[in-house]
Image 1 (tube, rainbow, N blue to C red):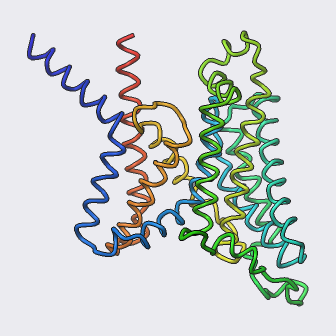
Image 2 (spheres, one colour):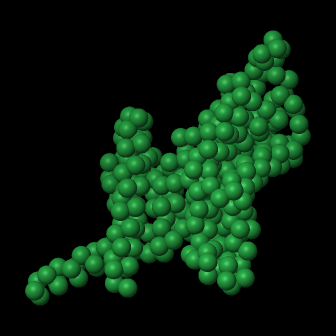
Length: 339
């Protein structure tokens, strides 16, 4: 009997350790392993490249984080990013608009997508997964129709037989390709938005209301919180983050690629759920999301150095997500059983 009790305690301690420090331990092990097999891995240049590579995924994941905080979920962020990408490119290449409009109009597009999601979920009452799945397909179809299935780039031929009159300006490309104080500009954009999201969620009344809504919507309503309004705003914030990711992607690659955000959806979701277990926070949070994106980014960077075929990367990303979910839900089940 004592052996069984001792074994249960050891299992509980192991689960608690994995939940609190598993992600950090995994990251340290990944860094040590890849550093031991490649001199090019543990360098300043490589780590700045990793940060730049995860900047777009982190923005997408921050949007998903806000919807998870209120007890929802947004599957449409990848399509919204794709739409923002081609809209941004078209405004500059097709219509030669000034840079301030090129930056603002795609964000408005993200707001509109967020409003559609909010209407379907909050007003009509469609479950979030089904509503955002539907929006994902609608937005994907819309951005392909808008571009007629073509990516947008400088001097591209148009279906009318003419050539696109505009080009990406150097000022715009600097947002995605430039450097500031030794770091790529996209890294600064990512860090600033992570800090803002962290402050909003953890140190403002609005953040407490968001967590209250997701934790117990009925109790939040009885406390006088307009939970419908809170959810409405959360999905709009998600759309804004997805649009910002699209703008940043366009500036980084210098073209408007169709379906640019589709392959990043899974990475964004994985980053959010890996972030659950950072230091045992156990809920969606901005710093955990950034850390989760970093874990995945460093892992994929190391696999690239090893020349692993790119088509095997999804196996690794899926495995990391499953591991994070397993630890989180086993811990939650144990805690629920104790209570």
